Picture: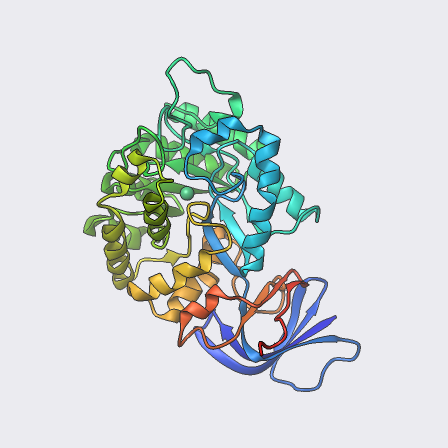
Length: 410
Ligand SMILES: [Zn+2]
């Protein structure tokens, strides 16, 4: 049994702050939380009374299983699948140690590497966040989730075009396959992409009919669908098809915002990674076509985020981790506040709302009896300065401590 003394505790379910709480943890779950001061007999005590304690953070848009940070997907062909998988081990550790105890991973270049990474973490072979994974991208031929940039007569191995589908029934077949393979959700691509060769983010890819097939088939397996969409039409199709979340939502228009509100669709807007795209561009590391795709979208994305927040659309925290270095996702909080959220809203996007999007509010997203003991802590008050979440100093996942605050600096 572990008892945590929390100086301040953020109650993400109620948007409130509690002082001097005692959290009792048993068998990886939270047993109780109260203001009582006497410690339960036999408990080992963790004293965080000078810190702000929060539920473990959740990033709803990551790509942890793509190996070392790399700006050009075609480099995947220079490595074996096992090389990429082993390169992903530090990605998982950096993510957990930065305070993200859970991720919703939304696609992988080498199909099923994410399933393997999830299972290796869950079995304790390696250290990382709890992962919910997609297994592969379901995408049109040559689409946003396809491995492109090669001569037309190059035949790719199966795991590099696993989720290619070009009709409602082909989409259903891929959903069935991925459900069988152990995917936790389905990722579809409803528009072109920024970081894919030969793609146009302003286009539409899957039709409404194909997206409806994905959502309907996924529902048969109890799976939710996340749809990548930059263009307004792609976003509209995804919402109308009934996806759980629209990823990026870069060019969302007023009609889409109203539709998202009406359908209760989450938006997962990765408004920080523009910094990294530009930075890599300056260093000459970003392929020129990717920079052209991105040229007029970065600022528009952030202004549209502000509009969506103001309209009251459901928002989850997602960074597209892998675009920026792993372990730096906390930097997005300050951008979410800069573009219209309160610090509490930004924190809820990465905790209670993220848990709701995952469909696991019973286990994740707040510090409540019966939920996983996923607990992080920071020095300072994130409600005054949300950027303190860039330096998470204490990390516990399912009752196990992965990071402790260091001795005070002199
Ligand atoms: Zn992504």
